[in-house]
Image (cartoon, rainbow, N blue to C red; front, side, top):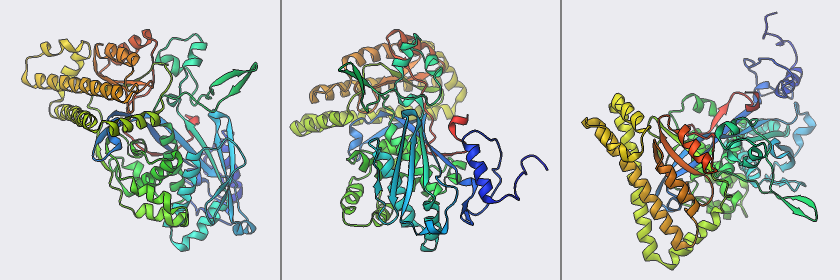
Length: 541
């Protein structure tokens, strides 16, 4: 018998037992060509194992402004991704199980050494859990995704859906190391603060919780040092995407095959459910740029009207959840997104200063308070900041256009500038096409400097450290480094990571300079890809 054509005569129950061994890494079989009904004789087919991933983000422009329509923000998706691995909890369901009104959901977070088991009502989608280690983002992602399946699938398919759900769900969640701070581990090993030290860590390294001494004993607090990449949004989106695909609500396989079709109806459905689940879990209707980038990848974003979700919050108290989610899916989502990615030969670099993170909600609250107390000055600053953001976007779009029109000239200029400080860029070129590219580069720098100045003014007026003095000193050094185009504090600012946009191969030089200033350069890079269906467990790579 030929290898790989091994067991078409075995029962589906035996086939599934092999699949369990395969996924635990104990047995190697390629059964990817097996194609059968998802349920047959009460047993599941091998292909119901699903892995979805969603990226973290960096909000390059639009901090605070993006909270209000029609202000735009440029959000970059990254190669740091969250993964949701989904499979049935049980390999078969008997006829007696079909009458069950409850299903079991097991959620594993290996990096946090947590396993939480829920019982979920298939009547009203409520969750029961006795564990203290609950995750509201995962809970709402599960509830709303299953409610979406009941809201969208034909009635004649609901029996099959019920059978599938009766087998329970096993969800494993993994986040790339770059979402979390590992400075303490690196320093404890005596390693230098360079990306190579981060790369030496095992993928999906265990996360150390913050600890305090109390009466001679360590008390573990449920607080994890993060780098500000939007872990909750990426995690929520990955879980929603895996569930919706698993339940047949969307087909991410077709979306993954054609990444140019970024705004397909499949992705829109993932976005609506993930956005709603994330907002409800965090207890407020935020701007949504983090979930939007997790779904669609890098783009220019204008937020949706909050009423679409606040209405759902109110309705869920008196209306069945599947009906509420059905209305969410039919609702008028008026957010705007325009495709955007960095121009060629430009690289996103993130640095972790190790100063501790900032509380975004409290900083946003302080800015809103300032807006109410001084509407004239705040509106003036707001408008100037909006103009500066637009100017930076225009310069970057122009650079992408110039690269497409005259690649050789663009490549020559960018590579030359990557080895020089910005004050020397202009004097290097005399050719008209080259000078135009340099002017666009310098224009982008000027816009970024203006943005930083206005953000500092806003922080001072609101009494919060949007660009703290320590970050200002670091960013001034960064902007004065060879090959650096831009530098700033992403999103709401504060003491989280700083970002830089570098030209060509100049990133290595910047990471050395950052290291000398006690700043750890992360392994994060821009990756314009949004949510995706993966073929394998990421731990197997």
